[in-house]
Image (cartoon, rainbow, N blue to C red; front, side, top):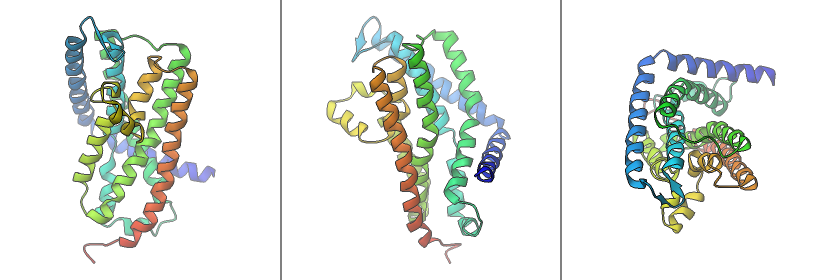
Length: 265
């Protein structure tokens, strides 16, 4: 087991260093993500003014937008194309001959690339905190549980990404699948607008999917919109989705490798 974790750490370290080599990506992510956050702040400040919508006033919305920035930066900044390229260019055939679990190795690489976005997150959050002075967590426990939710986003994001990447075995293309995944995640997670603003039937659809746990769950816990029991329930659901997607990915992979082709052969 110790050797297995050493291999995981090696894959994660390589992915982390690979992302660090392209420092311009940090600046691009910070400019784009920070710019989007500033636009959202300005829009919601004008919309909410001195009032509130569905329980969100300007004070709580400031914290919500920053949480959305954190999750979007981490999730959308990960290196999913590296996994897809191994399938599309045929390297998967070589991977299958190695004594390393393909899914576990890709998970280590993916999480390593997600960790590389942390400096961007820190700079963005510190800047937003100085500019907008958002409220702190509803309680110390809420802050801790919010941190747990953020940690669970790492395996959850990999699970969703890995399943969509496996679609490449059938489509032989990835960019359209990636765009669809990011659109669904951005909308149903609450990154675009809080789910509370949506019709009840659309909220029900969203909560039947894993996406709300990327933004709505940590925001609800942080702002105290759920009690301790509710927060623990949300975290349990988030962890269950992460586990379910992991094992679902293993089942799909067993079928997908039957369609391996290299240069059309």
